[in-house]
Length: 254
Length: 254
DNA sequence: TGCTGTGAACCCGTTCACAGCA
DNA sequence: TGCTGTGAACGGGTTCACAGCA
Image (cartoon, rainbow over all chains, first blue to last red; front, side):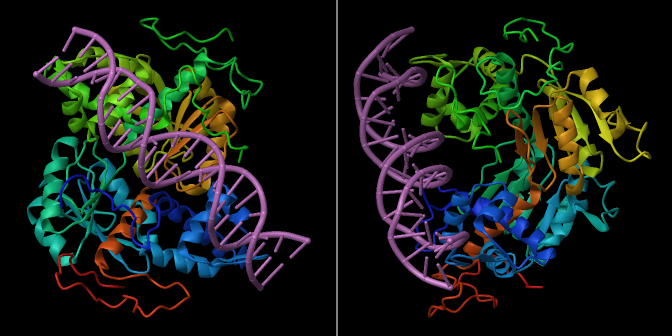
């Protein structure tokens, strides 16, 4: 194991492109909804609309899984639900630990989507002794001291980090040492992990900054824009936003 | 929907690739840390390491912004912080509303990273009358009925949706109608918005499913191809069949 | 007649390797 | 002598357009 190998290169004959993998949960959600409405089959067009992608992409994605559709008809909903679930590894149950039971950790513990599909919150862990023993979402909070034991006793391989940034790397190291090989990181830090460990990050402030970038753009080019939205009531915008310095082209004449 | 115009096509003149924009906040965070330690300059190599990318990519990214470095030396930290902040539109203050003050909404309201850089929680909104008037993170919760007025009075253009999935589209529509043009969606739903409105989504359960996919892969090291309907000579795992080196803790199926 | 499945073209982003400048 | 800035090669992902099959 030498240099940067974070995700495997999808080499094998079985290789499903990473971009496709990232969309499978989306399809699965749409299919589950259809299933609950007892819809027997869907066309790529319909399903794509429900999942918010275009149909060519969806068909291409599915083609990596195999030929699960019927030409002239579409896809069998139940069958696809099963195939995608299996592909994603959701036919088994994944015990997950959440480390850091602050506001966010508590929110995650309470999040219904967790239990609904293949995941189970096996334990909540926090460094604050005041929290230890108290239950959040019906699950008792345990102390960080027991982290390794908890991981091992429960056979946990997926960990969620919801601690402050300063504690994240340390927690990460302990999780990995205890056997965790997939980490979902909510702390605003770059985690470094050994090869073979996957990290995905969710970073609120980064998302907002990306939005701000585009938002700023919109403000500056109301003229050249392709006229997409901009409904009648454009009155908003020139609100009392500040402008301590005027480096940014101020809002247009509205 | 929309005939393929979700993000504008990176206008020639000012065009910064979307992938680069998504990394700017990462660089900014690393630079801010350096700045606080009064480090005057960094090389692309050092900064790249701090941001978790490789140096060639970082230099290429910065080249889209302009020539802000000094050959043989590196980048001036303060100067870069300013340039990136400006590029991202963070030299102005963005009022943000959070709709849906459940566990997650409350966590977001309390999230420090919000206020720290360019963003200000202008209002919290919830449909539950029991919450109305109560303060979360020092900010009073207001009722959904007043959503439009709140948006307009505060000149809000960025909205955060943290409602249950069922309410998200409706809330989204109202936000957009009231003038919001950027939305950060935490609800597990595909939102449809008119052209000119940006949506970014954060979806816990999707992230976990992606991790599960890779995790499953790790467990079945030698497996050739999980059959779909075409049985090969390969026995599907399903049973707790693991590789000789039991590096990954066993997982028990439900 | 539809709708799936897929080669091929196209586009965007990453990496390489080196030219250019302090 | 470094280290930045960047053209060019490369590779993955998306889109197109149509062949193939129920």
